[in-house]
Length: 127
Image 1 (cartoon, one colour):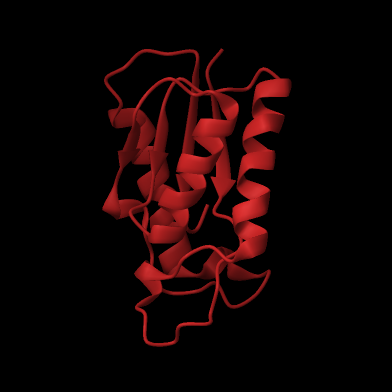
Image 2 (cartoon, rainbow, N blue to C red; image 1 turned 180 degrees about the vertical axis):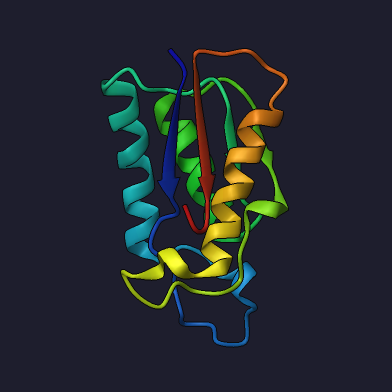
C-alpha cells in the first residue's frame, strides 16, 4: 500500500524583512527540529523513497535536513508549483483558494510521479 507523508517546513525567521517570502530561511528552532523529524522517520521506518519539496528556501532546508538525518538515499526533487506565497490566515483556511490549489498541486505531483514506489513523501510550504 502506498502512503503519502506531508511534512510542513520548519519554523522560519522574520528577522530579515527585506527578503521575499520565498527566500525566508529557517530560524534556530527550525534548524534544530528538522533533523529531529528525520531521525523520527528513520526510527519509525518511514523513510520515503521520494522527497518532493517546494523551492522556498525554508522548505528546501527542511527537506535537506530531514533527508540527511533519516539517511534518505535519493535526490530531493524541487517543484516550484508547491510554493504558495499567501499565508493561511486561520484554522478555517479550508476555504482559502491558495491552500486548496497547493493541495491540488501535491496530489497532481504524486500522480505524475513516474517512479513506482511503496512510499512517497512530499514537503512544501503549505501542506
